[in-house]
Length: 147
Image 1 (cartoon, rainbow, N blue to C red):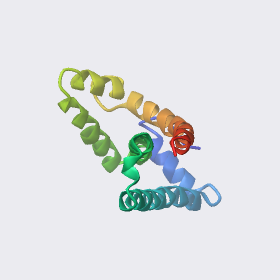
Image 2: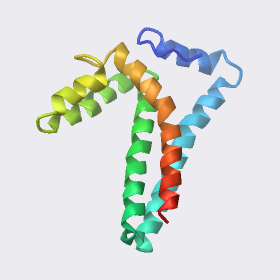
Image 3: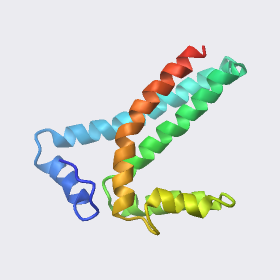
Image 4: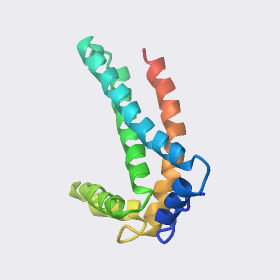
């Protein structure tokens, strides 16, 4: 039902919410589930700090990698509806990477798939939003192996 095209992404999300049986429920469970996942993630991190789990360097570092991967997945999911907030969020957040010396501008253009946030960006974000959870699952297993 979702289409990762700049011309139809917003209307495809509206179609899912309005015309698909319980599509509104699936969308809001997906969005609110991500927020609940972050709450659990922050509680997990707080527990790790409280009990001194940062002393297990490999486990802690893998947890940091996981945090950034989950944040990237959530950010890409935020961009997918392609509303005004999504577009400008993608523009501003990805432009932050241009502050990296020497490679920042090239990195931003690679992420965008061109010289601006456009159809290529949305298609890439859709693909990464789908693939990253599988990578995160593998990283969670590595995180657990370090315990």
